[in-house]
Length: 184
Image (cartoon, rainbow, N blue to C red; front, side):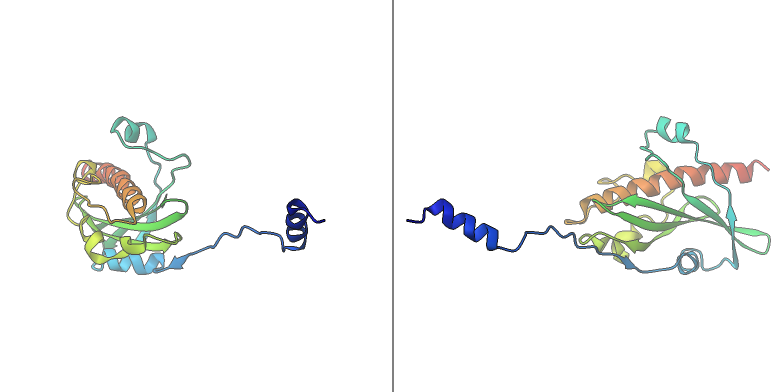
């Protein structure tokens, strides 16, 4: 007589092994050069600038700073006239990295935000123009607060929050660039 346990063992031994597969998702939307032109179209050239974030100052301003924080910056100009800056950064959405660029005019106001690469399987709605337009004209981290100044998109909460926090940090860095330029 075959017991239930023996039947289950035969089924289990004959069954194919279970394999956990993770589905990778990544979509590239813009190159850095395309983002630069979209964010500050009046600029004729973009010159990479060394940028060493003052992590202590960012933290003292109440901004979280991820380990290994290393955004990149480009000065946008037409001839000798400074048009602003484009900063490239990446943040973690829910699980995966999001590469984005933020443009700032010469006075330090956000001219726009562009998503370059989005790797999450959900939440790509942060690429919609309506959501990204919320950043335009804001100056300084106190005007870029998630939930107050920048609204959430259901299903993309962490992507919205983390990109907003990233733009806050970049805005703080740009305010330092504006002060340094005006100090000359």
